[in-house]
Length: 349
Image (tube, rainbow, N blue to C red; front, top):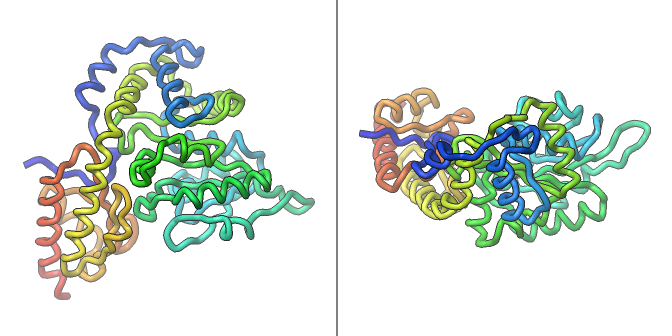
């Protein structure tokens, strides 16, 4: 029996087509701008999102932090949602690398809007440096893969332009947002000055992300990438898998969304589990196990013994993520294992 790994969509293995492309990749020194496969990937990424240029980076975290560094100066404030990736999962690098202060805004569902942003805007004065950037996460991981409505993005973009504050979008899973909304990547990207997206989340590539923006921004971003140790030399062996991912993997996203909805609807019927299927918009499902009497470690440990992997991200809060390496049979088995775990003695404590 194979393991159903639902901890994250970063656990996928490269497809056979990716492995072949990696083996056959034409390479050069990317720091010198001479890797033809990296150059092709960057051009293709820029075309997809409708930006002038792109730069290949090892991770989404690096892409986000490069964007912050290019858009801001030390002392600037970055407005972002309080549970966004740049606040919770990037090692405080806003402060450590860019010298910026996070203005973390609480929301009910992870989605910022202009009425929440505008009171936090501050012009520079002799007391503080002022607002340097607005950062949006789309889809929002900790909010359960929630998607920014296009009208919200367009409103933020229009008001930010008027306020002369740039907007960066952490689009680690922006392909999922586009699929859920039925719009193009370019339509979403048009609402931000810069956008990152991951090849290794939801698209199945083994490594890498792209940071996109206008040509001058990307020229500066390459310098910041080098400062962070992101110059990868013969990186075409990685970029080749990314090219395959861009061409082949978006077709797998609707199935991942359907499987996530199936999981949420099925788990909502399990005693001890609390989940609202209406809040599942993409490939991430959060559910509460407080009613089972189990700790996160007990719950995920029991699942692991039965060949199902899940992740506890907060007390009583479990995350499962669907992707191209799990199918409906895996999801059905996961529901059976979870139901059996919840029916155990612990639920009667």
